Image 1 (cartoon, rainbow, N blue to C red):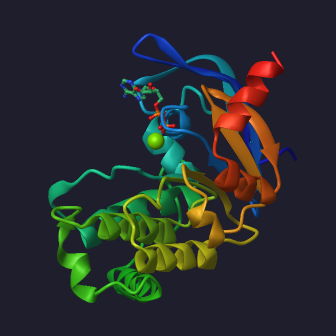
Image 2 (cartoon, rainbow, N blue to C red):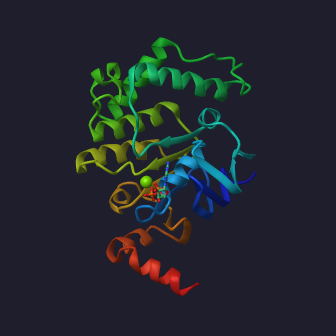
Length: 263
Ligand code: ADP
Ligand code: MG
């Protein structure tokens, strides 16, 4: 069997402009990869494309997820199959509580995990009791107040609460591959630690993680196996965890120079 997520020569246009210019990346379950890069290099474009956001047009290349090319697969199907994206800017859904949102998402995900992929699973979802217990456990893990579950999704949430909400969702859905897009931005050091600890508790042989970040800071808490540098829509360098430290010390300019001199 091949790898779990294989990105091959991915080219993506946004509003007619090419943003990703041939990205190759392979992620297996059990691995943590980090993508670092300057602002505007295409990190969020990659994340949104992987999830199938309609504004991101794949003009060339393939995305293989668990043995299937998902380039034409709708976003909800990708999510049910076990791809998960923690958004850089999560949106709010007025009138939908955290608990209701999570229950709906979990039922959709479970129908695929346990069934034939068309919602015809033996287990047609999660019972109220099981759901409450699961939610309680995961919220405790993320040190979230129980009243949080009754609030409307992301309405009036602080930056830290939004990010914690994303990780709670991830903990509930148990994805196969999770993409965290700048989950560190806007977090103070305590919130960063709680969120990172949450992610670390979820990592293991059944989960592959792609941590997208501008700063090295989150990688002090979530230890990547591989670090990739994205500049102007291309992965220009890959290495071990030390590459993130080097980047922190030297900034992005030397990479840009190195890339320019190799052309
Ligand atoms: P990063 O996440 O690395 O900061 P982005 O992927 O957000 O970079 O952006 C890369 C480029 O693509 C930027 O020039 C940005 O303006 C453009 N871009 C990304 N998403 C959109 C969008 N939805 N509409 C218009 N331009 C976009
Ligand atoms: Mg971004």
